Image (cartoon, rainbow, N blue to C red; front, side):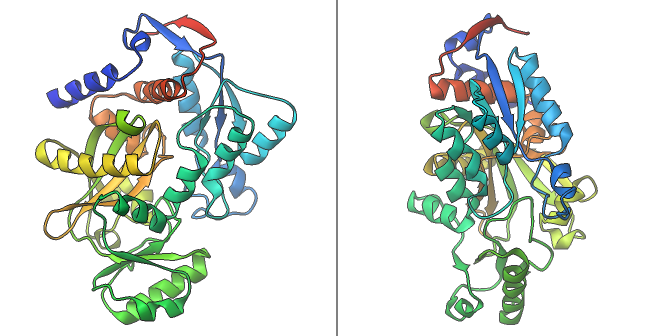
Length: 365
């Protein structure tokens, strides 16, 4: 059931849109929207494992985004991954704007590859730019930036060599995870460690298995939330807060790769209101603005043992599967259906870009 606050929230978000779109009598639509993405099936066929492609998208997600954009009057062209984009650009193809959800596959700059290419060709795109995607993918850099802006986050160190553990002075319990992982990759029931031996063995395992630095941070023992955000800079705002409650029988109650994969059996999502929601939104928006994230995404936060909300990480390329992804689930919980979520992301992006609209279509109710 959608609360009165959710209905008011949706109305507030609508008020932030450009006036000509807010009135919904006429919608300003560019000619063509290109879609860039990475499909799981394509990389599985090349021999990658299911865990390696966990962050990538399914055909259902691309179909849903495409359908939502077309239902709003946009014309769409499916481009594909970074190699497909390179080929298309070499053939002289262009688009009025690109809806980019490509995660990439290799290295800590993998999410930045497509935005950097589009910048080089001066083609506008939806969601964050290359520098933001580099910083936010590296959880240590992201925490450093938000901390410098006064946003609370747990104490941490980034380990690149196992010998560095001798210098760690953080108090147990600690939490360990790959510095550039997503979708819970590298996180399991052993990610929360309480002894020096467990810390050493866990960090060594992650360094070996994931070929990237490891984030070691003070474990936050309180409740976990995710906040949906639309917009950019001072114009960004929350669309709602959702609590994530994991059954203790699933990876010791940790929101892990396994838990996320089997969320229907192990996880409960709860709408959050009132002062608690406001506290989560304050931290989330502070982090979103500090990292210069754009257009739409999610910020994950968690309470410490005293109930203080802390920044965990930001998801500037949040999953957009219409049923399984946290952002659409959260949006629906707070009064925005999937089509409206995609439409509003597009309109916030076009407003940010000051886009010269190619033609005007009648709005679809």
